[in-house]
Amino acid sequence: MEIKLADISVDFGRSGEQKEEALKKVSLRLKAGEAVALLGPIGSGKSTLLRVIAGLIKPVSGSLSVKPPEGTVGLSIQEPQRGFFAETVREEVAFGPENQDLPSAEVDLRVDWALTAVNLNPAKWEVSPLHLSGGEQRRVALAATLAMKPRFLLLDEPTIGLDSPGYQALTAVLQKLKAETDIGLLVASHDPDFLYALTERVLVLVGGKLYVDTSWGGLAGQEEVLASLGLQLPFLLSLLRRLQEAGAPVESTQDRIDGAWAELSRLRRAGKKGATGDE
Amino acid sequence: MERFFVLDDVSYCYPGTSKAGVCQVNLDLEPGTFLAVLGANGSGKSTLARLCCGLLKPSSGRALVGGYATDQDEELKYIYEQVGIVFQHPENQFVASTVEREIAFGVENRTRSSQTIRTAVDEALSRFGLNALKTAQPQSLSGGEKRLLSLADIWVLKPKLIIVDEPLAMLDPGARKRITHLLAELKTTGQSLIWFTHGIAEVSAADRVLVMVDGRVVWSGTPAALLAMPAQASAWGITLPPATQIAFDLGITKRAITNENELVSALWK
Image (cartoon, rainbow over all chains, first blue to last red; front, side, top):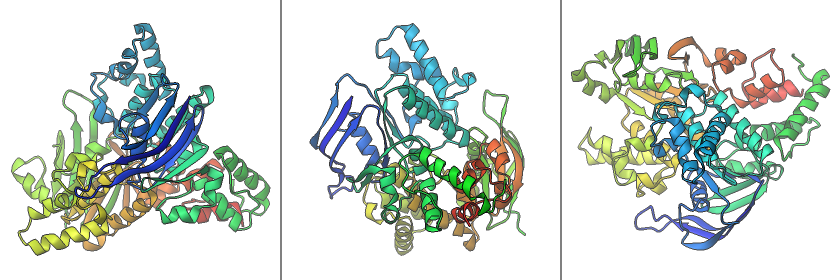
């Protein structure tokens, strides 16, 4: 599966008299199996970009192609409780697959799988989604999208409202999905640590323009630029840079979180004699 | 010291349920206090936030703001003059057609002086970084911009008590830093702040922290004391600062690590 955007522009005209572009000539190619982070300051166009790819916003110019066209693109929006309408969590998650005209046995299987995958307590499957906490609602919304088995999953600020167990559960769910399927991911978030745990490629949007398209290792060298935009490196990458500046023998441009952890663990093992060394 | 805000054995059960969403919470807040209430999803934080400002009435016990009881309908108007709450979903509270009019709305209900209104609105636009968006429609804003506007809406009214529920959600790191500073400095003007969240990093400047589990307050102390027990805090579903979490994961447990510099020193000296 491939998603291709060529010179996509979107107008919002939200300031009344002035016409304002939410996206400015964005060109981009996303492939199945790829996990991509979308960073950017507040109001930089991240949600708009996701909605264009999901087909919810029509660009004023440029073209979007999704190949093959039957490849499903799933979007989990920022405020999922806005879209809830069913009487129970189960019915909410079943709605999508039911509209894919699947046999009811297959719908049931998918609902069970999706709700288990997002680690929602089965005691809550028969209650109204409106009676759940914010974090639980996020997981129901993700399950509703996953149940449709999208080939490419678009997530808009998926960690908002999640506590530590919910955050870890979501990270584990998405890592497992990545490992076991060739699903593509595009994740917009203000949380670089979550994105680093999940993705290999980073897009930075600034003022509706695609500012950077690189790896995490590539982004590590642009810490000052990010800071000027009000953004941050993932904590682990920042920590490796600080350690390197302090003279520690570490490689600070790690493309993957596993590599960053390996560097820290190696330093911890080798440096115990030089470090404060508490156990 | 004046007993400005008091929760006296407050419990709340949602209609049709027997399980208490909030159970026997006691609190006595002096003016100018920054209180953080931490807990996992579903621990009762948002319910407690609504009980604090009179949006919910206790099933038992009493909540008093400035001496007025939240379960007395005729006293609510005095409570609403003293308390401002910023919800988890900011668009719930927008009423006006532009950002500027939205911020002005509450001030206009307090004063007729156009100069006072103008000055207050301009200061709020500037402090919350919303100047460039002042003619935009509130509903057209991004999630983060809506969050800033909802905070500005309440801040501009200068209530004696501000209650915020996950105020940094949807903000980028730069805005998070700015808003954290702005909220923490409320105490310098004698305003009190109750900040509900599941992450301790954002409330490190709090005078006191309460931890909620299943509707009950299970622990009370300072942010530093909570950071010194990372395993317990994690078990309560609280999100630790990244430096504390990584130190914990690496087995550095002899002393509390709260920031990047301390972690660098612990790993390499």
